[in-house]
Image (cartoon, helix red, strand yellow):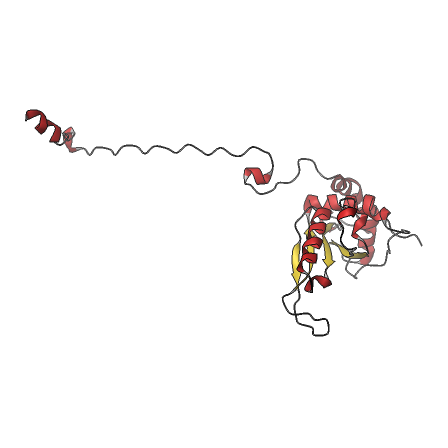
Amino acid sequence: MADDKKKGAKPAKPAGGAKQAPPAAAKKPAKAKPAGDGPAAAGERPHAPATRPRLATHYQEKVRPALMEKFGYTSVMQAPRVEKIVVNMGVGDATQDAKLLDAAANELGQITGQRPAIRRAKKSIANFKLREGVAVGCAVTLRGARMWEFYDRFINVAVPRIRDFRGLNPRSFDGRGNYTLGLTEQIIFPEINLDKVGKIRGMDVTIVTSARTDEEGRELLRLMSMPFRQK
């Protein structure tokens, strides 16, 4: 009986009326990060490349000083620069078959290295059998290192592969230093596999600059090795 009473007895309170601290909760082991250096593996946002793009260095060291000398700029911030490149691919027949838009977006993603955004119709047009909100194309806006890498591949690899190429039109500016050109075939880019191309599609490439006039924008692109047509 004495042993049973001892077992059912309450534990003694600590001296001095101090409250007994609750037992410490067991810490959960930290989850190990998956192996790999890519942003998808680490669960982080993509970072800039470790090495500076070749054309970005060329602009900073040679093109910008030449522009400042020719136009008499007093600050490096006045010199025009390439701000972004927009690549747009229209897919009008996607209203009949949605798979055509997926194929075009996949090809544009391979060309630019960035997932394209889907463009939708802003209003309905009965003559074109078009309704508001229907997907009619895809576009990509490139900035930073991806912009320079695409521009490098574009002028050195893709443009020379244009059929009967004799140079780009030097007058295709919009009056504010922005240059736009149209391509009739996406197969000029080496990233595209000819065996998997379902249809030949064109695209528009717009190079947006900070130039205030067409003359400044033309000189910027000329110094950046844009193959303009000779007069």
